Amino acid sequence: MWWGINNGADIQMKTAWKVAALALATVVVAGETQAAMFQQCLTPQGQVNQQQTQTFMQLMQANDMQGAQMISGVWYTEIPAPQLNMISYQYQSFQPTGNWEYRDKTCTAGTSFCSENQGHGQFAAVRQNDGSLYVMVNFSDMQRNSTCVGYFARIQGNTFMTNEGAQFQRVQ
Image (cartoon, rainbow, N blue to C red; front, top):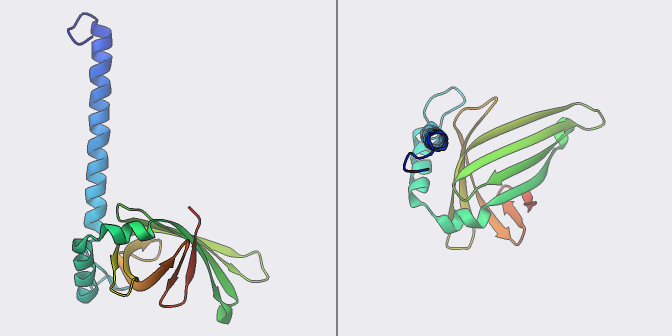
């Protein structure tokens, strides 16, 4: 009780509130750490790519919530690499908050050999005058750290296609 009539329940309530406050503080700090982690775009050698970093920061500051909402969801694609006799089965998740994740499974055709990867980061999606989106992702995974990639995407219903020809289907 709030007035100290039942000390056992009062202590349990105070403890529960402290745990909840600590959990919330941990989430806030983790979010700030993740946001700080994706402030720069790095080259494969770990050097800052000034041009990509500047572009990414400008897009993040533009804060086009309607663009982010258009692409939010989980998307699936299959990316063939016939020259390597491989295919990548890939899921990408765009969250309205600007968080981005991917996971893929790349397999060699005709064999049971597959490798799996996953990564996370942040994205910005800014609407263009022609109705397309410019999407830029800053991500890290097992092989890359704060790598930035950008492309134009056109969304029609539950499909989006990039200017590079990749076609994704919304699965969630």
